[in-house]
Image 1: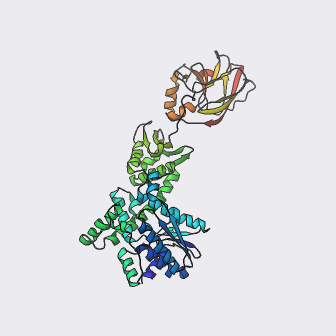
Image 2: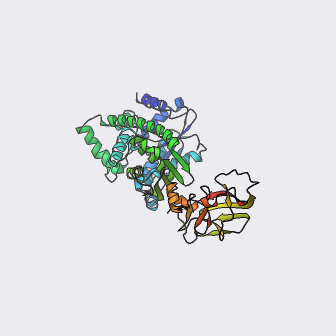
Image 3: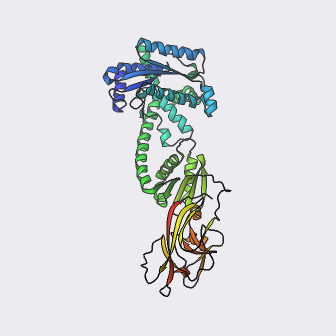
Length: 474
């Protein structure tokens, strides 16, 4: 029997737990009336409480009022709580820049969730909607024509979060026969019979043609394919999580994907990039295969290449992989990268500008008494060769550092390139400078000329403390 088929489908997919409240979306059409009757049949077996929600879209005038009254009377007949939510969908769609279909769907799920909240079951309630096999087939075809990937081609799933679809195991013909045999009334939304909406064109023209001229079991075959694609998608997501944990570093402003990414299978590359873009954007809409492919291609490009993506995202090739981040807007008038602190002997000097915040402690030391324990933020330098004033600052044009005993000079820019320091990080590296000669690239290396030798008595001990670095986009 069809009732048992639905009950088994509910149990197989673990849609409902005993004691839960289920909000049932009922439009008054065949599918939703069938859904409501199926849940009523099994209400005691499942040990659930039912609440009925009808959403008035404010579109069809008297017809919409008729639908609301029909559902209210139906609920009265079965002694079920009825909740009516009214919206002006055309106005809402215009305000939010949506199609009326999108706006209607948004309103319906907002109403369902509002009903759960108003009845105090927001955390443990379910929302039952009346999608069937034909709806699934239509969705798969619609997504296929729009160029969707595997996730879109798996169509509609039985259970997603708190949304359940108990009659997804039935096709439209089964539902109509059940209602006819059970003498159950329903109403027909006349907009379902027009070709104004894209889905209706598939429902009224394409799917019937496929079933009549190609394969009468087309809906069943599409359902099986969608189910198999769903399994593949689930597997890919599980594997993708493993690769994400292995290759992706989460940062304050986005993500960094290491170059080991290039060794992945192409299918996994696309999956990983897609998930990374979703995570950074915190949205899924408008992120397409074109954007995903453009980021994948970056791994085969030279350092510094970047692509612009939706939601102000930037993907940029670095030495060791690709950065994905939200582009920040800086006020160039306020940023002063020429800001410098003059060093006047011993003491603590605090440096803070738009890109870096740090302090440098300087005091005199004696070579004979000193125990040299150097690290990247602690150095000793000679005092005798300092000419003019030392400055604490970030980079500027013409900077160089002496790198060996021969006095060989290397441009600071070339040093950064050799060390593979990303361009956007270079303005956040603090320098101790004597004119354009860099005495110490703090956190990196010391100028050869300023190194301490056993012949010298008076030296400076330098101790830096980095508070924060703010990387800027070029």
